[in-house]
Length: 81
Image 1 (cartoon, rainbow, N blue to C red):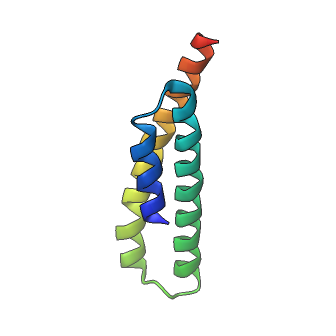
Image 2 (cartoon, rainbow, N blue to C red):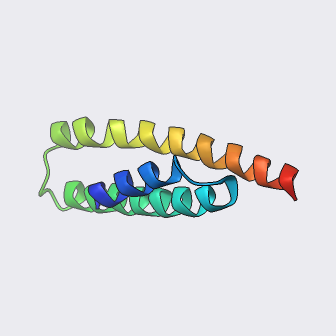
């Protein structure tokens, strides 16, 4: 799943504004799913709290960055239409 996120972000970086948003949305959905699955692992105690924090913090940061990129693309598409 992590590799799919990276692939979608990489692909988005080379696409036109309209197509870029499609790949960013896919990456965002996958990232949300990954964070959710990680949280489930932590809640059922299959993942220690320390490891959960180490893994989830960078994913949260990546989510904020990806969200900012999505909003930027949405505003660009709005300008183009």
